[in-house]
Length: 469
Image 1 (cartoon, helix red, strand yellow):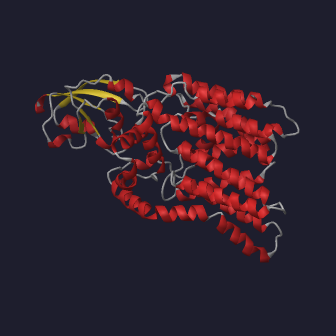
Image 2 (cartoon, helix red, strand yellow):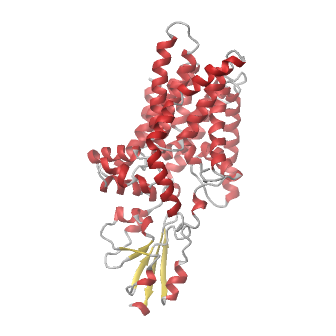
Image 3 (spheres, one colour):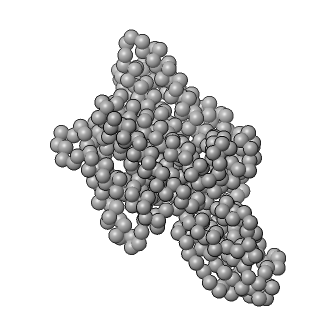
């Protein structure tokens, strides 16, 4: 009964403000699934995208049945997060008992960062779920490999499902490869340490090969698309002069933010010192408990650290050290927290208190609008059909999602054609593109009459251009 209440509560909390405004990346998903047929997504979308196609294809099928509203587009992520919670429960039960499974699941389902991405129409929660299932079968492989009787049949089934879900996760999110690679390395080390003799290198290598099949097959399947995506990305980045600022460089700050956000979610406010103080103290306590759990299970520690090291190494060439790209590590963190708080001899903090801290941060995000996503919904209500909007067109999907009736023109080429006397300007992503739109408009004789800021980086400006009327 407690488990049922836990999952029901987790589902209901995810419905709170689920219809908040879509932001840029979510609106891209909306445009894709609305305008590109399911079977054409790999050929029409994926070559110009930076992600594999499976998530888009699944949401395309889903939205063809349930529609294209914010609720509909985000519901798959809600469902995936609950599925991930179930497999975390199974992992905890397998490692120790139902109590560990219950609290690990609770720490995951009510983690503020998990709740945030459970409400986002992006692929990160789907990848987290598939990798949680992969982790479950990894644990099963380790458990059943110690059996003498029926070990072969059990291992065969576990190995098949491990490779199946690891391969599927790669078809959703390329970053899954870091976690899969970590499991492959750990599995090889565990195999090698069984007897610790040189001749055991061969079975250890054979074992690593077995758990690499899903990764290898998915990479072979994706390789033509991946090479095309890399080529198109290099060409596209010519216009994105400051794009690296949004990707996550290999910096200490970005690594530290992973630990902070994993504990307190996507919250931030000014002044920064107060944010770091309020968020830093519970973060330190949470990770102290996680460190206690790390003493109970070294394998989970390696599975947490190795993907971060792989990602950090790759980020020296291709920046990607943003915390949300490692969301799939929160299940490992949740299990470590449960191990640290339940199995520690001097249990001074009750698990319900830790859960309460996570729930508080979750409700701060859910109930205070300033922490919600970019507010394109409110901004577009201020637009008029007789006034054209100038913005960078590749970033205009949120606007057109809410207002298909408004004419949107390219801000980067505004000097090349006559413009009306009154225009609206949405300078969204202009800094990333390195565009000084103010200078360009003033050179055309335009004067800004007013401006309004909305949540996030959404700004609406009204300009009068007498010289070009």
